[in-house]
Each structure stands twice: as C-alpha cells, then as structure tokens.
Image (cartoon, rainbow, N blue to C red; front, side, top):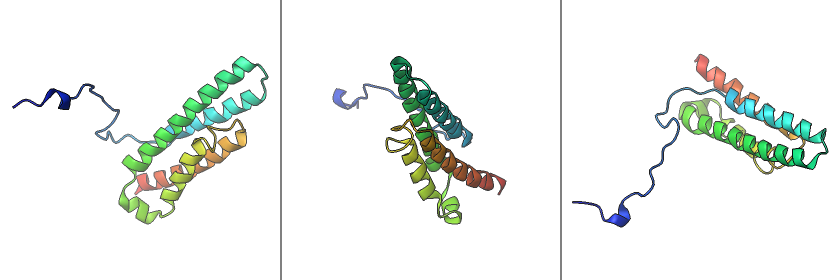
Length: 134
C-alpha cells in the first residue's frame, strides 16, 4: 500500500551527529565566545560603519554557534547522573545560553558581556572535564 501523496515527505533533511558520535568538547563553544569578545573589542576600536555592520553580523553568527555547541553538550553529552551530581548544571547552561543570546553577547558589543559568557563556559568545562575523568 502506498502512502497518499500528501503524506509523502517533500524534503529530506539531515543533521550532524545524531548518532550521537560521542565527540564532545566545550572548547568549541569557548572558541566562538572568544571570537565574540575579539569582535566586540574591534568594534569598539573602529568607527567605520561598514566594518561595524560586518562585525555585528559575524558576532551574531558566532553567538548562535555558541548556543548550538552548548545545547549539544547539554542535551547529548550530559546524562541524568551528571545532573544529579552537579545540580547547578541546568542553571549554568541556562545562564550561558542566555548570555550567548539577544540579552547577552549576541545583542551587545560590550566585551564585558563576552567575558561573562566565557566565565560560564569555563564553569561548564570544569564540570565536563570532571565527568570525563570519572
């Protein structure tokens, strides 16, 4: 029996690492956050409107990548046992992704916002590496 045409998928999509592949590292989020900080500093030091526009666009893209890398860690790497051992972990991820978003580094060109984001990522990384040791 064939599916009716309207139930047949029209678009086939694929995603990276839905295995999951098992390769995780908070360094991916940190590198993008470091880029946000550097871009924010360069933005502050440059008054050229074209440069500033490009800087904002690139910084916002990097902020989305930070959120993506954090979400992968949060949803794919960390397991219930990790959240039991580190009860602050959900809050850390929530705060870090918000700092990467519109109310944080994505919506600001203040390098201090990027520093706050980097701090949260470092707290997550510390826990991540503790879990890898276990």
